[in-house]
Image 1 (tube, rainbow, N blue to C red):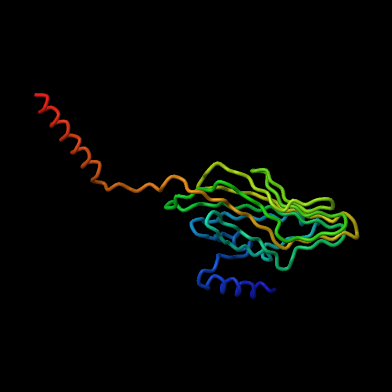
Image 2: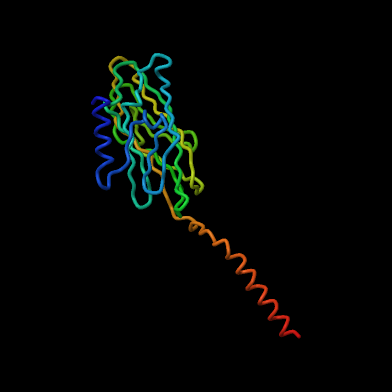
Amino acid sequence: MSNILKSMVLVATLSMPGAVSAATLNSLAGGGTITVDDVTFSGFTFVDIASIFGGVATDPGDIDVTGSSTATSVTLTYAFDPALTLDGEEIFEFDSQFTATVAGASSRLINSISIGLADYSRSGDSFVEIGSNTPSMLVYGEMTSEVLTRSASVSPTSNVTFNFFSLGETLDAAARAGLSRFTITLGLASGLPPAVPLPASLPLLLGGVGLMGLLSRRKRAA
């Protein structure tokens, strides 16, 4: 799909009633944001590591990032169009990052992060993986096993920066591998209710009431 057609599809999606937020990773890394309910994702970065040393290049313009939500979570889905593919002794690798911020008026806090390897393929001596160092998580598919989801708890917070990597490699001429879609989900739980600003005159009023109580006690004591 051409970049122009992708942009038209994304604009149409955003214009639909009740539609989720969406953008290419390229536009997000250029300063864009995605807001899903009370959570805003910003500060996106993308570094194509494999192409630095001759591997298969990953184009962030080919990665559509879509936000969605449930009652207790928000999810970013990364979809590759076309799929990122390896064909015989090739490698891809990239790093990316974002910051998620819960709106100040919200009572919810982020309490977990999950990674899901939603759609991939492989054959022969090959693997595909997505992981992070903080918190430490890894999902993968390889010759002998696969782990498709991982989740880690985090201290309840209204702001979190998450850095992750994706790596795939085919280790012989007959091997194949591909990555089409993965997800990152933030779990949300109710925290303390948001602070309600007091009227500027309220402390003076309370002070006056306290003074009246003090005078009353003195009169009774006399």
